[in-house]
Image (cartoon, rainbow, N blue to C red; front, side, top):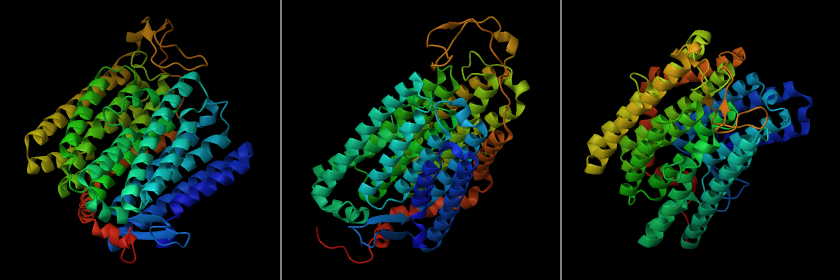
Length: 529
């Protein structure tokens, strides 16, 4: 089984190299390779998760070097769960992108760019989840950064270059801070291996340990878009094509959350920064949802809800109890799926209605009823309507909070309930204006566009006298099919809620005892510094 550990990283990288060699001459082969590799990563992820759940964490040392010199990859219940969910959603996004024929919308971007870059992104995600040392985790982040910059600027429009520039600057600053944190820990402990760090940080002076913890949390907080480190996100994600925005919003921010969970459960389990993290969680919830309420573009609205729901995950991680961590893992799994789904559905709305601006849309419940159903189910899931998994995750977090108690925790409970209600308000606004409102109500209105593209798009603040278009393009069956599959996956977390909750409980139990992880990574007693 250990031989499978490198495969989720190596297979996409090798396939990306093959696709670059093939170039744009064999589009059918390009698409076939993408689907086959992503399907294989999903299958391997399931196998690794089953093995880790049955027999505990598994580790392998690449290159024949033992830890801490070699590159360590580790699959435990947490990383296995994240790997499976990420593989499932990236497979769905790839099916959607192929059906959309992304290169038709982006004529200056050849097919040979999108597919290998997307696979490199998948490799970076897998490497981040499986990394057993901080430097390899940094490498995984940088692989994702290189790939994501290419994807976020697909087409080369001025809006995408501008948002991509903001994204890359923020990401590079975060990476620099992460690298400095790694250097501090290496200077203080003599290792970057997570198993050794888990033991040696206990011997560090309090000030050094808190500095390293704060630097790591800040670096991960930027990637997770935790307030106030989230200001870059609403202006960066919405300009990209729907498949790119979907995988960024649904998955990449959760890599940061994964880093926060590892930091707080493995390296610094004492919860010394519990109160600051709780305060950040509350601010993320409220600022994000208040921002969502005033948006008139669906993609920007969803970007702000993303920030608000990151607050739920920081809330659970900050509490640090077994029940809270289990609820956080469940909520991360749910949110990866539902946020990806909503952005894909936003792409369907844009293709069918010609825009994602609520000032331009109307009547989609009549002209695209299936899209309306898909949006309604996914929106209710995000809003936490029972018995959908969004409700189950929030309920589990609130129960863990009530069990822990304390004024700040109770303030978070109130904040989470308010955030859930305001999320519903924002999503109901989308439903009312985009789906329920009659198209003739828009006739003659002067509307303002939120996003500018180079070729034929409107500039921000310019008035458009044209009549709104209700139907501009048909929806390929595979685009609908991929969206239906992800909506079904999200609903399936309720249908199979018992086994999933049991799995997240076992993952939390495993995280509560760092020795489970450290014993798997080091096959022999660790030496001195």
